[in-house]
Length: 201
Image (cartoon, rainbow, N blue to C red):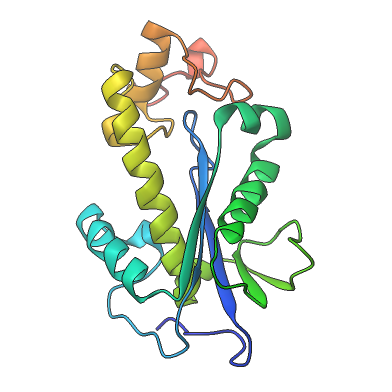
């Protein structure tokens, strides 16, 4: 059972990101402030939910949240500052979008760059422990997945409509045949060495 808050007296924003391990597309983060009495039977770490559940949850979270925001960091920025710093920057941009200023940030993971002198708590696997972080994980993932499926229409051949930029076999086949494009992260290893390309063959 997820918890509704970390500290009852503070306005808390849960923060999480999506797309860190992708070869293409931005990294996207969300920040969500929920009511202290928030409860939900289905909401959990977005990785544990089906696409149908995620799409149903998104409008529910937006409707019930006291405030929410989404931050995006482009592949070019990822290449310039590295994926870890890009993840923190995406969270910062999401927090900036909040119409209510939080007093405490709950960060999924074990590291974070402080934002605007706000206190924060890093919580490993926090998206499976606190509703606000789980809500942020759902918003970040659904926003990013939709963006990548839209890009798949303009950049066919990489199977982004299904892999949303992750390093699947189909995605790497596309890179091998078509090369990279403007949405690929050039600082990532897009193709392993030939012998390791498809080790399951």
